[in-house]
Image 1 (cartoon, rainbow, N blue to C red):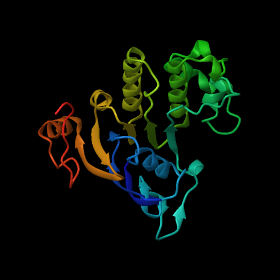
Image 2: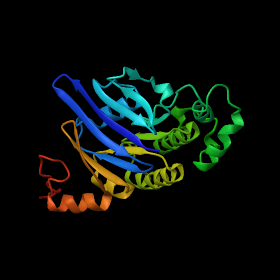
Image 3: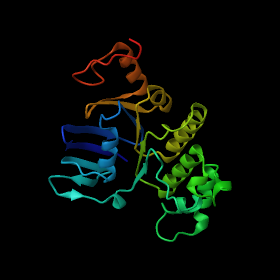
Length: 239
């Protein structure tokens, strides 16, 4: 499975230029707030329409400005975890998981995901009755139940305390390892990116930089290398 993203989109004075290619691996898209990370995910998911370019998933064209192709979100087979998890407020945990499995699935189909993400005892609760960690596990279970071709994670740990964040990071890593699909993880936190592993792409002012392994990225970061982002020198924290 391979995801190719080569797009441009202008919003007022801001211009997004995203150029990414990922196989069955994680790419952490790292950068400050407002640099275009979430906009990139929304374009891949079909929530936003790029002005030009192409998005191709495993040879299947999701968007092509020249050929006038723009598949709706429901036809893109994308699992998207929003910052607030976007659970359906009037559905139970079980119903939220089933919502990712097509029309009127057998309720028992949710059982393996309830067990896998350790939320079986919460199956009849509504989102307002859940803690932040329980909401995230429910959102993770829903994504796994969807069986998407690509997984998009928009700062999923931003609202969690430190201890819970560490626990759920490990669970997220296990999920991505099991799914073995292209995944993009958005963050502005260097420590999160380091712990998640995989590959890293620095994004600044709407532009994506080079895609490097986690080890290469942090080696280059220590050196303040321009290889991370052509045209910029990146200064490590504290210098």
